[in-house]
Length: 187
Image: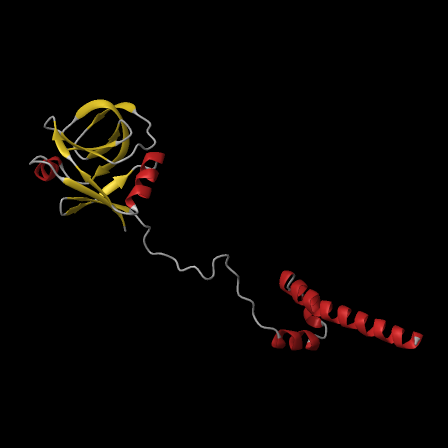
């Protein structure tokens, strides 16, 4: 009975030691390659056998199953039926506007003062108003709940949202001929 228990303990210990040895040898071998001349002079037949039976390990990336997107999802502005190129600010107001644009946000704009189009976004969002002179192409937030797009210039306290990449003449043609509809969406 005692011999049987000793034999079982010996088998369990042997399995534990042997299973751990292979892993440690592999890790040590990868961490410390041997490049010295004295090591080359030693018998390396066992080492060659080990190298031939192990597979080359590839680096593991944290996001193996995530497909990389070529382009970042961006907020797009359409004025009536014309999609315009916008450089958006990186601020809390734009982040909240992007959330609203996920379900497509349509804003009925009205001409005001001969230099801007103004329209309600439907709710108040974070604002950081600063006295500024807006110029053609500037997109700003007024009073935390109004989108303003300029085709002229004006000085007031606004939160900057972005800039349309068109010249003043193109903006005047697009925005200066009556009320427009602006749509914000994510693409």
